[in-house]
Amino acid sequence: MRALIAATVRRGPTVLACGVGLGLLVPPLAALARPLMPVTVFLFVLGTLLRVEPSAVRAVARRPAVSLLLPAATMIACPVALGIAARLAGLPYDWVVALVIAYCAPPSSGTSTIARMLSLDASVALVATLASMAFVPLTAPLLTAWFSHDAAVAISPVSLALRLALLIGSAEGVALLVRRFAGARLDRYATPIDAIVVVALLVFALGTMAGMQQSIIDAPHRALTAIALAFAVNAGFQIIAYGLTPGDVRTRLNVALIVANRNVGLMWAALGLAATPTMALVFTCAQLPIYTLPRVVQHLLPRLEAQRLRRRAR
Image (cartoon, rainbow, N blue to C red; front, side, top):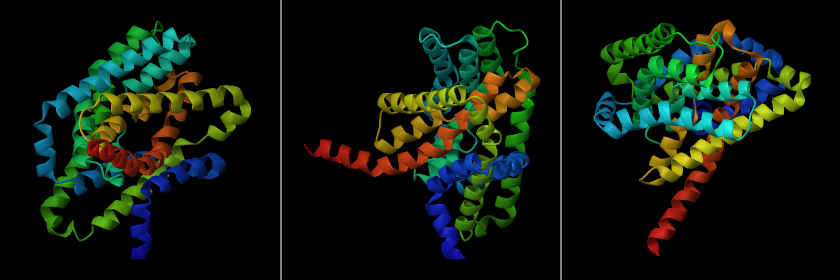
C-alpha cells in the first residue's frame, strides 16, 4: 500500500493527465465527480497549506516581486494583453469576452500543489496565488466591463470576495488547527497527505470534463477550436512568462505555471446564469492544459536544466 501511495505522489502529473482523459472518455465518471469538485478544492488547498512551512510562506510574502509585482502582472497585464491580442486576431466578440473573463480569474487553487509535484517552490506559488486573489474582486469586474458591452455579463465583487474568503478562510482555519494539535506528526504523514491531494486533484480533473464529450459530438468544429485555443493561450502564456522571468529554470517554470493556470471555475460560479454557451465551452476547455501540460513540463524540466548548464559551461 505504501508503495502505491508513493508511486501516486511521484507520478502526480501523469495521474492528472489521465484523469482528464478518463473524464473525457467516460462521461458517467465525470458526471459522478462533478458534485465533489468543491470538496476537492478544499482538500488540495488544505493539503498545500499543511505541506508548506509557514516560515517559508512568510519569507516569500516579504518579497514584493512575488507578493505584489507578479500578482499585478497576472491579474491585470495578462487579461488585458490577451483581450487586445484576441481582438486583433479577429476572434468573435463572445470568444474574446470568454477568454478575458477566464484570465481575470486568479491562479488555479491547485497551482501550488502542482508546483510541489514538479519540485518547484510551492511557497512562491501559494503566496502569488493568495495575493492574486486579493486583486480579483476589483480587477475582474472592471476588466469584464471594459471588454464586454453586455450589461448582463457582470461580475459581483462582493460575491467574488465572499467565495474567496470562504475557500481560503476555511482551509486556513483547519490547517492552523491541525498544525497546533498535530504539527509534530505532519512530517511522518507527508506522503499520505500528498497522495490525498493528488487524488483530490484527480477527482477535480475528472469533474471538469463533465459534458465535454457531448459538446464535441454536438459541435465538433466549435469544441475542437475551443480546445486548440485553450492550449495555445495557456502554452503561450507559459512560454512568454518563462522567457521574461529572470532566474534559474525552476523559478521561471514556477512563474509560467502561476501565470497560465487559472481558477476559471470561480468566474463561472460568479457569472451564474449570465455565462453564455461560448463561455461555458471556453471555461471547460481551459481545464485541459491545466491538468495535461504539467506532464510535459515534468518531461522538459531536466532537459532545460541540462541545456542551461551546458550554456554556462561554454
